[in-house]
Length: 121
Image: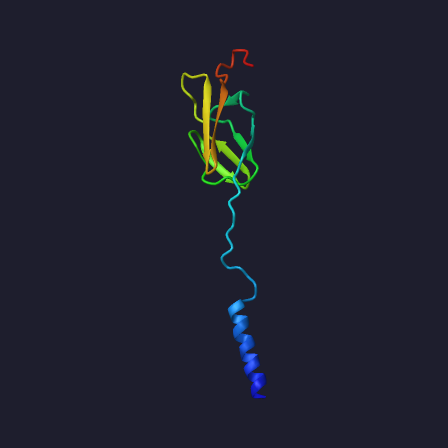
């Protein structure tokens, strides 16, 4: 009986030393996020103040910021709203930076029709 008890205790000690195979030091590898597309695409006319720019990535981007508007990140989608009026410029430059890169997009500004008598397009 004593020999069985000692063997059982040795087994428990060995089991404790080896563990159950779980690796608590597992490192989660960073997956870089790459820009895929913008909607509207670069070069398409965009409305300042009311325009919305949507960017799609292949993985969730981290630490996203933009030089214009308000940025919202949901999974792989970045939405930029409240785009500013660029003043006298006719183009809006949008620079988006995230943990793995930067992209610069250039959009012509859609000038709002403010004259109800004019034939606006």
